Image 1 (cartoon, protein in one colour):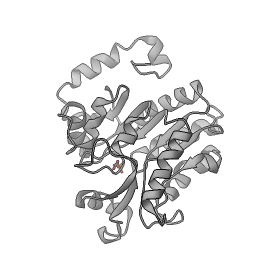
Image 2 (cartoon, rainbow, N blue to C red):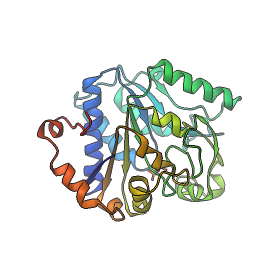
Image 3 (cartoon, protein in one colour):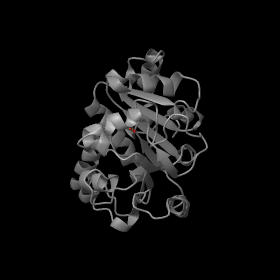
Length: 267
Ligand code: PGA
């Protein structure tokens, strides 16, 4: 796993935007896996600004989001469909038909999950998957003890995640208990995983993900098995890492040709 430590959330988001830019430059019809939550908002602003400046073109891009709340339709202000429209899609001129988000109102959830997996396969698989990490180590909404081989399915949120996400709703009582999420196995099939995490609240989960043993108790640790995973964090999220000086050394000694293109050591 490549660990990139930036001084603050702003520079971390800029670094992530460079990776998106380089991906779309190399493959204009890239398939992108997208995430929601507080962390990617600044990255999405960067992508919107790059599009406005005609430096980025999403017209051939296809996207698949990680997850959605069960019971919230696309017009509910806390649905992830709404979030994506308001924070990214309306700024990047991507054809709506190219964007995919699990349908929280699906009548037959199991069937819908199978179809979601099939549409990822039909699109040729995900080239670059953006991920956040929960304070409890979840990726997507794969809560602790999720199977590390899991596929897109219904999950029940933990009390911790419900409390963490209550800030977006009026109260904890209003946070849906169930979600549809890509599985850990689905995520691991992306060709490149990019995890973005900022703030002291993520420091413990980040350390477990990078340096802890691989365990379903912290689903993000499954990314240690991924051949090409990049983690971008700010200083606050780096405080619990044991090998922090080594990660800085690797980054500082990155070959110039990789740095210039926003490329990772495995490119
Ligand atoms: P956050 O969520 O960006 O709102 O902290 C991350 C996550 O739960 O995956």
